[in-house]
Image (cartoon, rainbow, N blue to C red; front, side, top):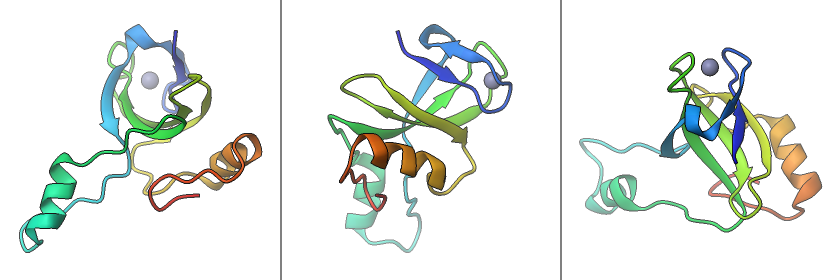
Length: 109
Ligand SMILES: [Zn+2]
């Protein structure tokens, strides 16, 4: 079972206490964007076997959204951080690099 640490209330929450929210760090495009940019924002998502960044909500806890870095193949969690963060914290990137040298995800590495 997947368990994630909620960065707000400090609880180690089971998967059943959480609501998935899809891919994290989406670059949003709105009015004035090209059709291709808006299409990418609306429909195109990463689907890696390996390092992934996701949005999760502590639905049966504090109710807040947070972000998680984890491996989709092994369910290993590299870290969680507040949803207002625009890019993964350096300590989490360093932890991923130590375990998965050469990883990349979107614009991050
Ligand atoms: Zn919480």
